[in-house]
Length: 328
Ligand code: SAM
Ligand code: SF4
Image (tube, rainbow, N blue to C red; front, side, top):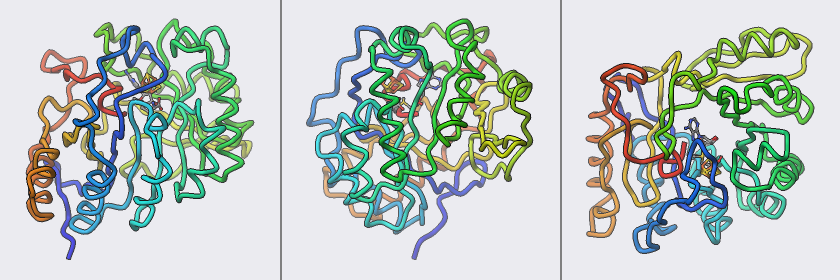
């Protein structure tokens, strides 16, 4: 019998995000230091069996309904279709967040293995700028990956764009237009202080309200759907051109409606993107813990989730892990 997994706000956690590797072929400047990070030794990364067990326990004990694979870059993990096939046997919606650069090759096998949909990160449509942001000259590969995801039926397709002031905010309308053209929902995410270099400042954040104003001036928008537990506030184009989302994590935090829990590649459970505490599940997994013991550890960590991250206030404490080590 499953029981609800409740956080500090009394909110039921239903969405598990699993970082399956800390490795990445990109070096996005808002996510990872230019020189990269020291990768975790393989022995510290959870095996497919261990990941599968945590997901199964979360489904059987807490009735979670969605599992998202992330990283680092999840497609860097060897044998990914095998992991997808294993997780696809669970009664959950299975999705993945990826930089898209390897999807030309992988979209078909992943869809065949049971992946339901993907979110692809895309921060610029200008090749030189893309290379400057991502640290890799791979815009054509990402655009080809977006096409491959569409052809493989990994739908509905979403595109994640992190806007940074004076870096790519002049492309907001171009990116929205591109989303309309390829039938994808672009989600403009406010830049969060989870960059590895620690250079985040409030002045670099492009508020969601400004995105809506600038896109809406060209393609009029109206609110769409109930907010629910989605971090994105969704809008639809009045001309029927599709939908757009904004994730106002900094200017309109949504902690009270978040239904997520995260597992890092080395098996630490995090109840919030900004947690400064974690629960080590790997040691439990490797020391013969029962499913019920694992479930209780998950419950304790989620019940200890703090009430709001307080970005921009003096009480904000920056987590030691950067975004690439947490998974987004
Ligand atoms: N490598 C994959 C990718 O890029 O989609 C998955 C992991 S990445 C950490 C997940 C998401 O986090 C991406 O959409 C990325 O743009 C976003 N992200 C990374 N650093 C961020 C930051 N400092 N603020 C807001 N979003 C960030
Ligand atoms: Fe890698 Fe994704 Fe971070 Fe870019 S955002 S460095 S692709 S993990």
